[in-house]
Length: 239
Picture: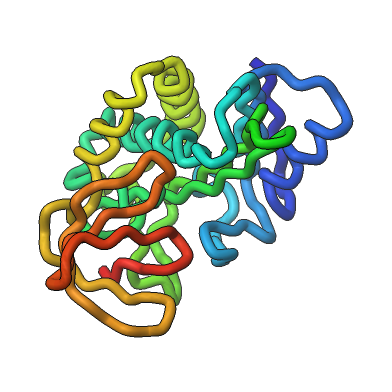
């Protein structure tokens, strides 16, 4: 397995993407950095990390061969892999906040950013960015953030955690049964089956209950006016 270690970079995803364009890389090639200056998550949100305290990694997954409209298939596999790795540390109340944030006790402990490389309408490879709050304990201006050290009250070995995440990624990318994959993902969904508050892209707040997801990753919410289906850009869970 190819492993590239960096002291610092603007983005591990961008670094790996540039490598992929110029040299031959193995399946599950990894770039890991002590610090990144331009880390981003969903919707272009910035992710700030203290140097050397968190797991910042990007993984190349090759030979995917799924249709572009089923990209969420990758999200499910990666979310479950990160969640499963964290479960080995007995972190309490873990869940997946749709589409792919990992929470512990209602606080964000990990985030995922997935980029795909496609030809025509088929994904052939993916660059998977994973950020886990590990040994950082202060998150200025981020009231919803938490780390493994916050929860477990001890320092975590970053290399051992990286190996566990990689092991789980390999496991979930081998899982071939789509129904089993969706069932596992929905089982871990944050607030599934509970009345929650949502905000649509017009800023309108409403109550609803998460029922599950579609094959393309849209979320199904039961509202007072019936079952509604929303995509990522049209709704946000207020938590």
